[in-house]
Amino acid sequence: MLVLSGGRSDPPEHVGALEIVLQMLGWGLDPDRILVDSASMNTLEQAEEVVKICVGKEWTKIMLAVSPYHSYRAFLTFVAVLRRLNRDHDIRVTVAPAGTKWWDTPPGSESTRVSLLDLEFQKIRE
Image (cartoon, rainbow, N blue to C red; front, side, top):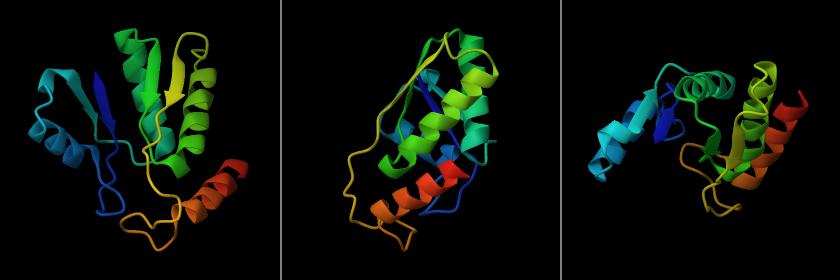
């Protein structure tokens, strides 16, 4: 199953789940194997909604496909939500960061991915 999460849509920097699902369907993915959360506007809301889906479906594993620089904060956010809901022993989380070049600038950004990683660590500390 593929869960696409994110309602924030401001391409090219932020591409929402509804835009991504159209791309996935164009690639031939079975629509019955795709769930969409288009209401979540940030990482915390995404974690809460996806965990809710996992609990409802009785899934025990989540693999997060995220930008490499965002992978640490996304992982920690999901772990925090699982712990808060006392599900951290029921559902395992792994991360599959996309293979991108750290010194390049992602679409819609003026910073390199390695600079964005520094920003992510700052957000984690806060």
